[in-house]
Image 1 (cartoon, rainbow, N blue to C red):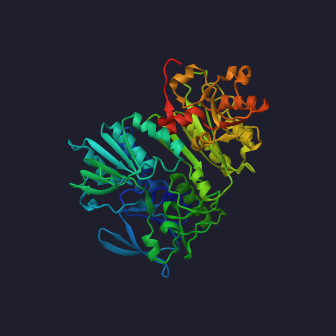
Image 2: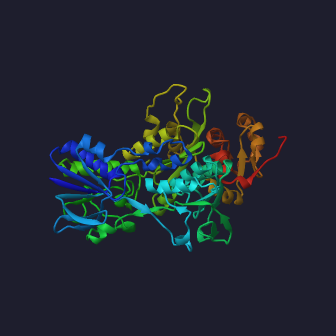
Image 3: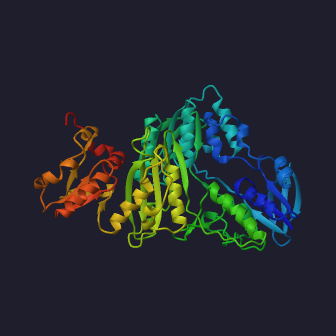
Length: 553
């Protein structure tokens, strides 16, 4: 059997190497239009700052190494310009010469290309770049080595945009980050992304949200924003998203779907016989809603490449869908997410409830314990897990990976407290943050607790509800809610007479744990009370302008 693969990197090379392990006698040809068929594209931003020290570290495999180990015919600088399904041939151009290559099976792994918005003056802007591959990186590095490159602007605050902002700042540039959405990191919900925005500001990155670039002037040195303001920029990175690279497939009569992504069935077969597709270019099913999605991440692409090889080799495999699990580091914080966001759940019109918890990455009494804030979105009727997000200095990856596994395995809220984790003080807690997240969600489902979200607080207080803060007096020095009552939790039982049973209360502490204890005390004493989910720590992060600071409490 002769198998031709268009495109390397994650999907294409995973397919090629797996095919060889299963089909020693197959002829396998990989055409890659660029110079590198296997490189670490996720590592590119870290070379900018020098955190990855050598360019060679980014080059995972070469045609020679792939030939030696896997007997693969890997051909860089070979661009496929046409697919002829009737003849089962592809037309390929190399150094200006065109030739045809036949196939028995064709695998498309063309990936995605940067989305380039229509911005006036972009064509003349010679200091504006995208970052998708090693040649892109080389152009950026050449600009950075110019003596007059002092300022940088990153347009787009998604995962790549944040990584570039961080690494450009670490290189010593003055960095401005522009995001059209109301908040940075749009794949996370607003209140979770607020932690990352605060970290950017803390590290002197100028953050501009709710704005986009509408024009470049002076060969890209001047950027005009929607509101008319002007930025000076020696180097600009466009990181506003990507789109499937599917022009070749479209011309061959292969059906496309969402945002011109390639439509495939659960075995990666396109509508054209003997042509399969994997990676960033294909439309997949979002696992929870089974709606069409484009999920451009390395892990799914690698899995898809292996699975399509299994299918071609005769093994039974199906694409079960993806959750879009992703993570990013921004200076000293990590943010990660899996599954659906709260906004996506709302758009899907699913019944849902949200809970936030804050815990430590390991035992609080062991040195260097740091906070992890987790958000869980779930179905309050049956406990189905929709999605989770996490932010913290350490241990976020572990917890979101666990929650992603729980969602894949179709576990429910009730299963989270049952999960058993390794425990010793340097590594975790006897009640892991994931266990605690499950306990908190179960309390809501079973009616032991009733929470109110950060974005509901102002309207709730406007109806006459009172906010009761049960933090210690010393904690109030770090800020407090406007017009709130204050009774420390340890004094609450003895001071119930200061409260009115005809009054509805919203109770808060620092993270939500002590306020839950207070909620239980008050409810069993006959009071009407709700727990402010995420409590002061979350509200202070998302609404700092509404916090008051009074010394000498």
